[in-house]
Image 1 (cartoon, rainbow, N blue to C red):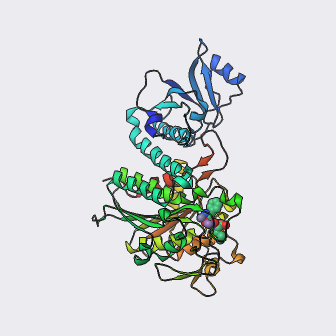
Image 2 (cartoon, rainbow, N blue to C red; image 1 turned 30 degrees about the vertical axis):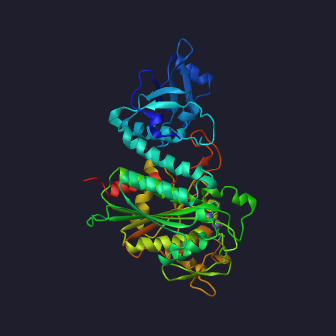
Image 3 (cartoon, rainbow, N blue to C red; image 1 turned 90 degrees about the vertical axis):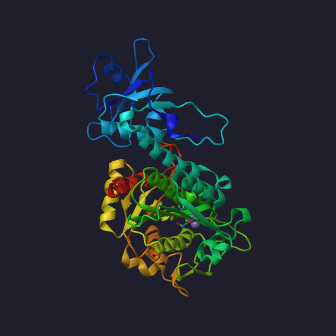
Length: 461
Ligand code: BES
Ligand code: MN
Ligand code: ZN
């Protein structure tokens, strides 16, 4: 299993330099000739290994273009550099930090089921660049990706709980889990209804972490995650192509656990509550059905138009629970809709919030750390699309409204805490194509942007 410390090391005598190529203007002599012979123009993403007189690598050039350096410019490095030790030379301090993080994020591989894992290049990060902080961000993103990449057979509700216990233990948080039929007594009826068809050892559960809750002068941040270990679609069963990748439907849970790990690790001056609804949307004689009317923790009833719109059902109970803590800020992450990808594609998660300052702060953070987000509207004109025939709400919004990611967000909005502000991220959690530095498979989206925003809102004393 990859850890950031395997990739970002603190010193190495043998490390070869990685230098910036801001275009090719600065290159001279043999290096300029080598660049020309290799079609290296210094544009962003290009990497050139420059040999010394013996023919072995002497240094590498990373193309970053002529303007501001993209925060994720370093991601292709691990894919393009030979294994061995490297160091940064000729970069500004702020660039170097971002490059080191990007280098680590690009180094992620999911090799749990492989006999051997390929050797990787490593990057030496000087102590004054605070490698521990960079490693923490990389490790949190690695947790997110490892959880999402792990097949549903090995990342069921119980294993999601185990990950949550690990995060709680490391950060000094308390953890409470309500599972199986106890969900009914504890008033999580929607979580129970969605998850009850699963095998007993994969029973649904509501996982709650609490950190610093006694520090009542601190603002309370609530994180809520969709943890559908596998989304078969339930009785409104998904077609094969749509089901194939639904091991990733616990992506929201993975994202909030990674973010919680960062918040606690950095000891941000907040109180933290993390709520993960972990279920398997399975099929059995006891599965919830199209047409059923479900109770929710809030008391609103929901007519099930489609059992495949299960995420918003479990999140309704988790968001209601979040509200009971009277949070100042609530963030939820969920692989909620296929429509989000239709609207913005896999690499740009929709962000929803009615709080203008929160939207601005998240978008600023998103640009600063190179973690894309795009704001979409909680359009009031579509609110009636989630109203039902025989219940308060329906989980499959009316077809006329079409904008499936927007209407799903409007459904969640009905359950968002009454206190503080709320933002919802409809993440894809996946790279469907491989690019150097972005291997095909799980991706953490919005975690770094959210953490950057929180660090600036709640700086350490
Ligand atoms: N987990 C899916 C959404 C999803 C699909 C996310 C593919 C990422 C990639 C969700 O539970 C779902 O099935 N949503 C349905 C809702 C519909 C039935 C109203 C969808 O988006 O099609
Ligand atoms: Mn579904
Ligand atoms: Zn789902």
